Image (cartoon, rainbow, N blue to C red; front, top):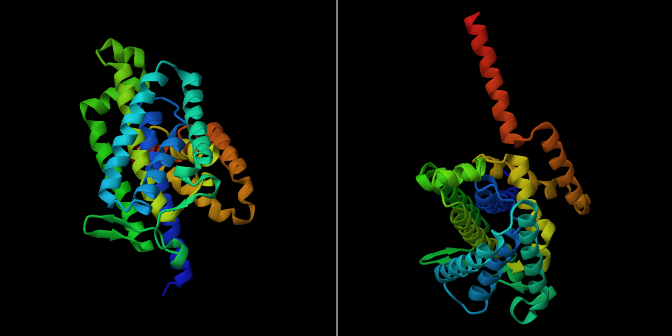
Length: 312
């Protein structure tokens, strides 16, 4: 039998990896397919988390209504932002989106009447009493135990991966891939590059916001420390780059590595950003296509050698 302490820590780790994988997979739409380095994930993750905490924890809204409101608010906000930021390209785009996350963090800290300020706020769940995540009701289904959140996080990730995999095989997905490869060439064959980039950004932002709602109820308490630039904006980019840019499995593998690091660095958590930097440097130098790309290339090389051996 598995010890309860070990089982609980394993459930916690898998849930955390799954939620961050949802964030990375969603962000990967913009970074991996539209070819835009977006650092705005922290803003939308915080948006979902605080809407979830405020709506269900203080106003007593049902979970489905909270999710619907979070999606609509995120879509409208992302559309307004997209109309502005896609006037910029390259480094300027990255700086603008970084500014969005930094402004969001400042709003969280200073708008204390809504966000609780530096002291944070509870989702209203039983975390303070029993150490459990905040309850999230979806119609007749109540997600409240650690196992419930594990199922919800893994299920949401599976739906995201399946849905986006199907979408990328459609015409719109092919347009996004064409933009990633060469937006000038894509425009020459009739793709509305700016509008498609805006659509990708809005979809990505909505999905990150929904991940934030789940994240807030899972941890049971939200505060500015959860949405610093390094944690909520930089780490998802690190997950994508380490796992493999432009691959389906890359963001998930990267999330497993990056989200798993705090468990391996419990006694040196302040050095986590340094470790991410070293990992990113190693990936760029040794495996520019990430871990998934490195494994794929290695397997292809093995297959070629086996075929040569069979033909000789």
